Image 1 (spheres, one colour):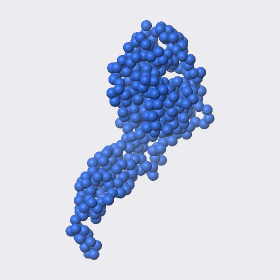
Image 2: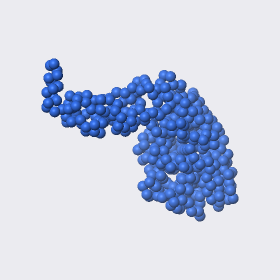
Image 3: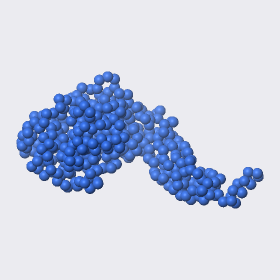
Image 4: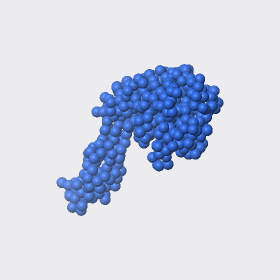
Length: 413
């Protein structure tokens, strides 16, 4: 049997029929009253969130107003700069965006060797009985970590989430502790997890900013997730399911990452795309339909591409200034940055960036190449864009006695 399951069209009847055909209970477990996989959710009540761009200059158009979204964030994946935001810290239900953290921890387990991608994972009755969106695993099937990750990310399988959590931590409760530990380490101050799949719970919440920050960490640490999240569909055990990410079908620049939908959360999309020389992360929360949320994602990605750019504002090893000091034998030392500093800037703002160097090092013993001498701060229209350590680009020994005498004499001539 082959089922084609569409992200915006799956119904509870289809899920029940598929479960029966596979030998699973027709209703695996009671679903929360506000769980939904179809239809529309009401738009946010109250005035539309006011969009801002923390890094815009006076000539940059304001970000799009998206009144149907409860909150949003547009982030540059390389630099972490927030290009646009509206209610970024609003605590909302994450729905299946929860599975981003589930995937992150599973990839960490693979990285540290406690799991392998080809390892077979036993399917517990608990995982088999998990309701909601599923990849339709059961205790009689052999399923690998790699297959479960496909089922988790493409099918948004709650059963896959439970099976992976048990493979990593033994129990869901223990895995949830790992999720909250990592959320704290990543600085996700508006996020708290209570389950591994995102089924509604009063204590489960996140924010658009936290989703963007987590997505950036995943793209930096586990970029291989894109090999899965970019796929339009996935077939497991002769069941083909279409990706829940509707933006994949309309935008070839998008290659991830995840969506979420319950009545409580609305239609949430976390998308990443390569536009020109930039990788962008766009997160919209609380949309009334997949169509509306897809349009909001496209508006944000277009805004970022048209009005911003990534620039290597200072390159490692390249001189940016000269530090002059009588404490040095040569009287000066060239300085630069230890690591290349990339900044996200308004497209018309690259030439307007200013910098200020603050020196803090004691130069009396002389300096050695690579020694940190202070910090440089880059600003645009008074806004701080980034800072970096300033280092000596050459050795410069301390002033000799002869040099000191010459300096003293020069003051009287």
